[in-house]
Length: 115
Length: 119
Image 1 (cartoon, each protein chain N blue to C red):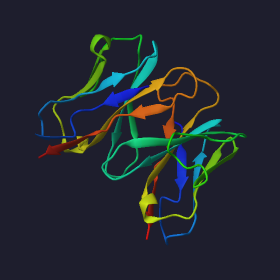
Image 2 (image 1 turned 90 degrees about the horizontal axis):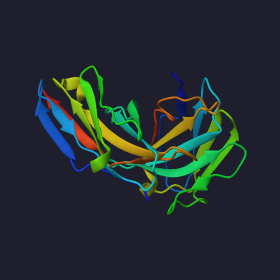
Image 3 (image 1 turned 90 degrees about the vertical axis):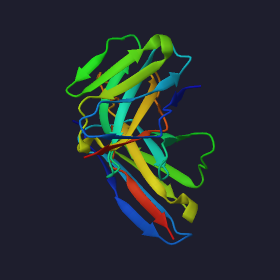
């Protein structure tokens, strides 16, 4: 069975600090997808990134970066120079590559950026 | 990007009534749609996978007779909460897969969600 664990329930930092959100996953599949989503107070899910299991290159997009370590089954997300607008709940998710591609979500990390 | 809409965005109803939630893919066709439920301060839990023209596949623990899903066309899936009770109050989110099978990053496009409050 697939499982995603986000051990950090809540994180609070001061604006401009860097913050890393942890994600650890479990799967028996040899190929899979990993995702990060942002859920602001409005509730709508905002897609941030998808990573294929065979691609372990780290990715950077502006202030966001992702570190995929297959050896430790982790897919961590770092926000550099955080801003108040980054405040939201962030979800890590896992899906199969074939079939229905159902998403399994982690418990989410509530990130609060204080001015 | 592709757009998925949900209607209504929020609904308040009395206990015992049925509520229908619509999920539409506005600019693409979706043979597969998913329904999720999210309780306050919790994660999204998949309720069922909806396939156009066939019966939905429900996740373990989800009552199929209580949560009726109909996916009658390639752009519309509906979730009906029958005889709703206060414990059904939740945030219901749908998502849709583009049936063209293009290699897209998102794999699923999410709707904005429907907040249901049962009194």
